[in-house]
Image 1 (cartoon, rainbow over the protein chains, first blue to last red):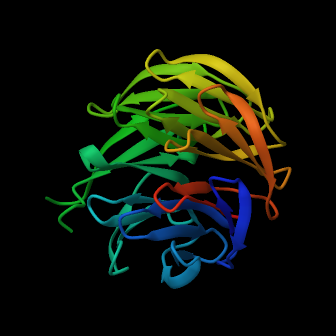
Image 2: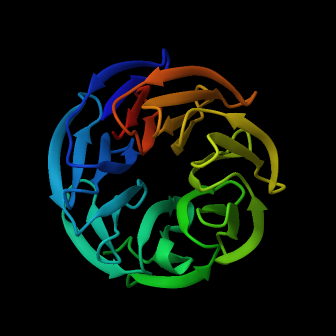
Image 3: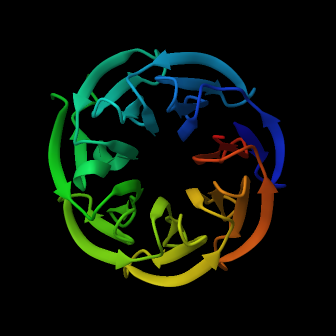
Length: 136
Length: 157
């Protein structure tokens, strides 16, 4: 991972994560950056302020992307190899549920105002809409 | 309330990137194989428009302040700019080889694009649709995100 100082557009640090990091998202409320390690079946958690790895969460095969819902305090991993999405508590880093979506899930987007997460299913030309996760 | 998949929405072939403009209530999806973007009405989970873009669109991001959606066209080495309210392409910007990830940093008005084939990041001045800097990073950069509070941009490579 490269860290860029946004104001000056210069690289200020590099951070080692898992294999083939792909999708990435930032939770500003929790001060954490989440990275999907496509080649490692894990999500790396980075402490944003210090650029250090604070935890590694095991998910399922070939995580392609992650997305944070800061309002609900959940982070999602699109597990491309199992056609499922992992729902993780942002602070506790525990996986509370894994839910099936369409084949070949790739990227995720959280619509926080509606408490929905959209997942693109590459292999079947659909988008799955996940909801109701705030209470789990 | 139980966790459910409340809807499954048909889009174009090879859906990959997804982003949302919460102000306008739109979710946008890149269809990698179809060279299009599907626009979904977020509240009703229905497709409201399909927009033609460059070859193999992949990463996508919305700048809500500027009402622009930026699409990385992997095969074309370009970024398509969509005027989000009207679903029309307003500009096409040349970037590096095989652009992949996109993120709009709204505080400073910069859009970051990772160039997978060039090991670099292009910085676009969001308001004017012009490239203001190109930053060398590690091999094969993929996703990009910004912490606007701390002024940091993270690139997965």
